[in-house]
Length: 209
Image (cartoon, rainbow, N blue to C red; front, side, top):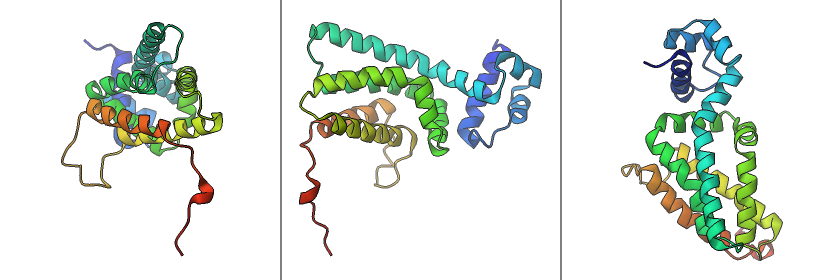
């Protein structure tokens, strides 16, 4: 039997994913979960804390797996750099595993992205992990200037959000709803090429008049 706290989390996950965070009231959650408002305040305190725990429930194990995989890779490398493909795989594959098992959480994160809440969520729940992985990327690509590395990490996060949260609708692949693990395999191949790409030369870009 699902206890009250888990029932609230499951209900909030479903509603946040379907309707968005702003559009979902605590009253809506307690009605759907069949609990009273006191239960929300007892277990979470507020709607914001409820969202935090909902994200931590899924993201916590993902982050632990990411760190464990990177630890293994770095130990195997014996102090040397880990190839960028392996760093990306350690970062992205655990996320794909959870997404294939819990697509409702993917919908929540898509809503958070659309509502502009991701910067706060990333700082709160993913900051230390991202810092660790950026360090591994820096060691994997020692000739890449720091500012350029950070730009490419920025592009990576956008591609990751698009791959995970937005249905493919700009090109005719919608008839091929690949599992998240297959999407991530494609994304790793794409990103590894991007991280290794030559430095840009903006002054050489000509715009046709």
